[in-house]
Structures are given as C-alpha cells and as structure tokens.
Length: 387
Image (cartoon, rainbow, N blue to C red):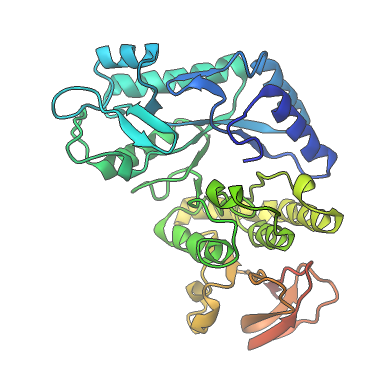
C-alpha cells in the first residue's frame, strides 16, 4: 500500500532499507500489483525496474525473502492474450469467444487453469521469473468465485467455486505463497490472509481480526495472516486526512502473537516516535515467539489443530462476551489485545489455573477461573502463559 500502483525499483529498495534502518526485522517483502507492464506478461517492467535481478539480490543481502503479486487475469489485446486465445487456454463464453470480465483493475480475460496446457504455461512462466531474477514466491491474488460464472466454458467444465479451489491447488507449486481467496484447500501448505479490513476500530476493521482468524483456523486454514497493520482496504485510507496512530499500534499488537504480522504503510512515515517504538516492540515480540509459532504450525500440519484457537476450544465454559476479544496461541498462551480506542482497562477471562504475564514482568500471577479488568496503557498487550 505504501507505493499503491507506483511499484518501482528505487522506491522498493528505499522502503526495504528504511525497514532495517528503523530497527524492524527483515522478513518477506511483497512487491504489489503493477510491477509488470500488464497482466499476463509476468516479467518486471524495464521502465520501472532497470535491473530486477540486482534489486532482488540486494533485498536478499538485507535479509529479505521476496514475493511478487500475480493473478489469473490477462490483459486483452496483448500478445499474450492473442497467443493464449489461439491455443484455447482462456475461459470462454457459451458462444466460444474468450471471457472478458470486469474486476477491480479494469477488464481482463481469465486463464483456464483446468486446461493442463494453461496450468503448465502459467507455472513455467512464474518459475522462469524465479530463475532469471531470484524471486522467492508469489502473492496469488483474485481467484474469487464471483469472478467466474456458471456458464463459463472451461476445459474441465468447472463451477465457479471449483475454479477457486483449483487456484489454491496451483499455489502449492510454490513454497512461498499467499492467498486471499481459497475454497476446499483445508490443510494445504498455503498462507491465507484475511479479506481486506477497513482502517477502523469496529465492524469491518480491527474488531474482526480475532473472530475471523479463529474461524479460518477452525475451517482448516491455520497458516493465516490477519490483514495488514491498520487495515488493507485501500478505499478506507484514501479519504483520511490523518492516520489514527493508536489504531495502528493496537492493530500491530493484535497481530503480534498471531502466525504472521504484515506491515504495509511505512510506520516510520505515519507515526511519531512513541507510537513507532511500540510498533517496533510488537515486531520484536513476534520474532521472540517465532519458535513457538513454528512448532504450532508444524503441529497444525500434522493434526489439523489450529494455531490461533478460540477460548472455547479448550475452555468451553468461557463466557460468550470474551470469544471475540481474546484468543489462545496454541494450548498454553492466552492473548487479549486492546481493541477499543482510549481504553484504560481490558476485561479478560482467565480459565482455571495460574497465569503469568509474558509481556509485563511486573504483573502479578492471576488465578483462574476469573474475569479481571486489567489496567492498560498504550503499550499494554495482555498475554499470559499458563504455569
């Protein structure tokens, strides 16, 4: 989001260097939409990226893995469109002509991945990009069932939801992947980010991160990412005159003890020093618990047990009021992020047992079962381990 549709080599390298210079850990950097000249030509635009392999190498040297955005759309009237059309590798209308459908960036044809030749073409195209530039993986966007219709003609006569299912299966070709839309891909080694959330506190915003992530895990999509810090729905950002710094901090805290956390807006640009320091601390906390998260991910892959768990998973007696406001990271860690603006207390339910804070060394051990109103400040992220 920091660069919107202006992806380019100079600004991406500056962004990456700023991450490191501001004390944030290098993780996976995702180069978003419009790094290529158009959809279907999955090569770095020479205008925007005069030396893409050198850029990737520099990002690797800084400690980053690199993923780039891709989708199943093909720009009409392009050489790729004409070639794929003539080889019968695009979805067709009942009259036999290629589908050209509206999506959020305009009008495009759609790959028919149910055709083995199309599947192989797309796979080899992306693999060639990896071999020639060093890209590590792909954010595979779109693929939602609503971009397909029941009367679309495909090689395997797939329904819209089956097209979405196939899009997920395609992602398994690449160990580094991220999706926003999946169907019947439970248990697969695929990262599923939540749908875009608004830059807001309540409904459609921060308050949805916990219940939506819990639902993902229960459905079998446990390798989850709770949207970008603050919210990834670009429309809700364009009208802002100023950024709510407290919201960004609380969003970072909510994400810190989930499987992944993802910044996009540059926090050093939109935050003052106090709020920036707290966001950096949340990233450090995530790194601190990385071994725990990895073990839980391995356990999920073997057993199907979610990484992020509802309180009711092990504690069915939990009062309903707490099921959307706190969660368990695995069986032992209770996390209750602050989700309301200007909060001075946080109501937390502690199940039976002794609970010790992992984020505040001065906090007293709490004996459950108990409902406790904890005093909180801007820096507070209530998180407790059962002894």
